[in-house]
Image (tube, helix red, strand yellow):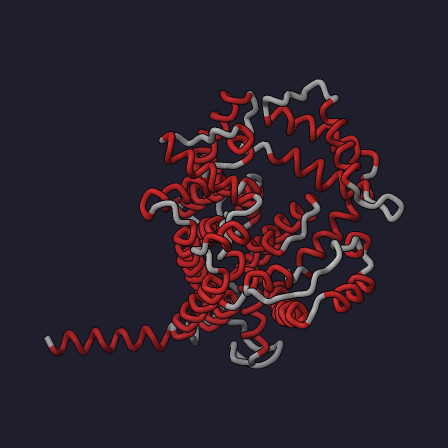
Amino acid sequence: MRKDSALLMNDTLLFVKKHKLLLFALGLAFCYRMFFFISMRPWDERNLHEKVIICDTIQYHTFASDILKNRAISCSDVWIDAVRTPGYPLFVAANYMIFGVRTWVVILVQILISLLTLYAIYVMGIRLFGTTTAGIAALLYAVEPHVAWVTNQFATDALYVAVFILSIMCFLCGIRNKESSVSFLLSGLLLGLATLIRPVSQFLPLIYIFVIFLFSGIKAVVKIRHASAVVVAFLLIVSPWLYRNYTRYGYPSLSSISGYNLLFFTALNTLYSRDNPYQQQLQATLESQAKNEKIYDPANPFAVSAAYKNVAMRIIRVRPLITVKNSLRTTVNLFLSIESAGFCSALNVSVPATPPFPEYLLYGNYHAFLRWYFASAGAGKILAGGLVFVYNTLVYVTCGIGMWIMLRRKNEFLLFFVLVIAYFAAITGFIGASYGRYKLPIIPLYVLLSAHGIHFLSGRNGGAGIKGQCRCQTCPDFPQKVES
């Protein structure tokens, strides 16, 4: 008995020693997220309606409440029923059913889910680069400001990112195993679930298929089998919701939100100019034009969305270069986003009242924006923004180094990472919304690349400098024994 206890203790100590960075990152991430949780006080009735159940989150709460009330996956409000996919409302409803209608419990569960995402990043890091790089990636993700803040919001992001990263992890396992299609089947199922949480990933199977056929060392027949596994599994999950919307509204679409985004973000941004600044009248004009479309039916949200798309596409076709320019600028703004006002609000840091957000970023006048920011932000907001800026700079620079190393070593996984990052950045840029939360799905990917760059710069990855032997487990010259 004593011998067994000694062996167990020895195994535990070895595990802790080998994975100490992971354990530290998990503890740090939990404390960091709980710091936001305690500051936001979501259990307080006043904070609940000022910081938690606001804007889109009201729709999720309504949808989840109706699921519990009606015992069916539908919402009494037809617009919410058409706009929102069922993934997150079902998750919220399950929490309500177990713990009662307590949104703060949902946020606590999201914090735990965020820790699961961190662990998945660590596992991916080990399989791609080794234990040390995985530990660095876990630490970077643990202290990522946007992740900690958004996880404490009553929103889809924490759940979506967790399911999506698990899909990525299964896909990478499938690529490495080469012959078995089980990992690709799981990846497709998880990607389908992620899409029912947020439909933004509905076109990602195309990237999965492209990468499968691009990878070397796999027979053509096997590639077809892998691609089919991803597609069939994905459709198995999303097709019931597509069929439901088709039978109920006449449109085989996951959500009716695309038309709204296309008209009131993409097209509206295209109409912006220095001589024609944003005004409420402009939005009202676009709404009036949509109502004149033959397809417009006020009782059918999908028909309204289709009318919005028609108006938006006419504007975009007339000004394609402006649309592209705005999309690229919004993509840059996405990565530059610091969300200092949001952080201050979450942490109860008082900031001076500021005028409405200027159009400097939209026109690319960053110098004017910085002058406005420092003149009106206040010390707390500047400090919060400065810390986020330092973190982003570190991660982006080392991410570039990590990408360069993988490119130099001809690591095939780099292309997959770049394509997925570009996919989310392009969609966000095209919509014209550069909120920091929209980059959460790609943060796990670029922190892995950043960790790879940091490990390389440390000189502990098989030799200091460029000529050192690469330690990537996916590189052709990976040594047989990897030093943790």
